[in-house]
Length: 118
Image 1: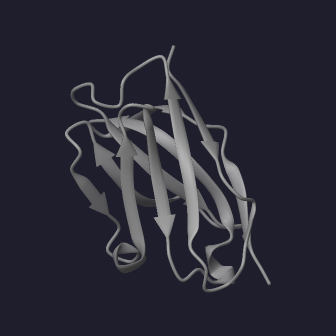
Image 2 (image 1 turned 60 degrees about the vertical axis):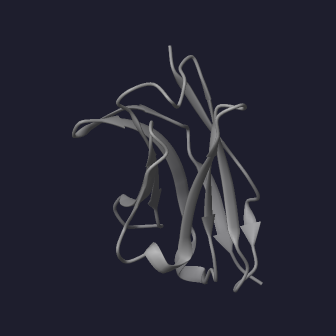
Image 3 (image 1 turned 180 degrees about the vertical axis):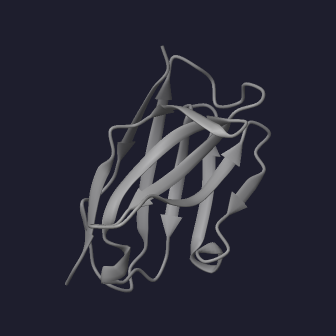
């Protein structure tokens, strides 16, 4: 059973960088052909795909967030990390990590609330 767990600060100040880590257990992040994904849901809005890091280490970003987003991984810890720079209150959301293969997601983290506020 694969499990994903998000971790990171719940409160970030405007203009700072949001950093979240997803720790994966029960499966390796280097296993073919999975994509390890960050998705967020602002209050009252739908899910927004932010980006992903592939089993190979290749990264993919939402065009609307690409200039502010970086996704990396630590294979020794079986973790992948999201960094979102220059945050504003509009980045307040529940942030999820998830595993994707093909067109679907089969495992999700429970989500973590991040609030951007001074």
